Image 1 (tube, rainbow, N blue to C red):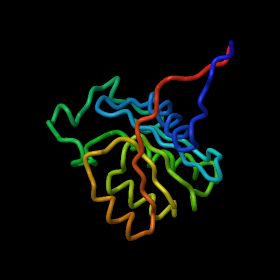
Image 2: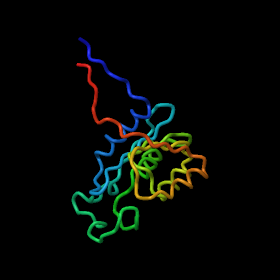
Image 3: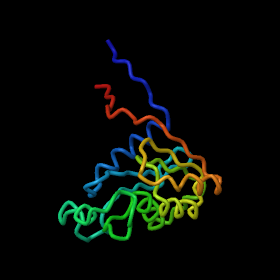
Image 4: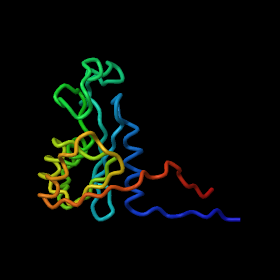
Length: 161
């Protein structure tokens, strides 16, 4: 008897991919993944972690934890680069425009990432988790960026073996 498989929606599919991307994170506080998509094609991915080639928090420990800095505050103290920043950087390194794209991310953006996404001219932001900063909402509204919050996708992968 054949196993029945339900095909995920495009939003669920790309949020699930963002969740897998987040597994590469080197942050001790939050694993965040982002996927830039246009016309149902992946343009770039990014996860949060230290700059390429530098020591990360898994190796050095979390400076923010050591200093007792709450989530969403004093971003300059963190050695990590946010997933949304990395998706923009990866796209630019490969000469890919994010204009008109959708960003699927495991968390909502901080205001710094939101500003960058506005200037990258994305049209939509989809997430299932919340970051400790909601100031992006007004900025995205003003820029005409659609924001959607979805259910966390199932971690299960369906195989037809």
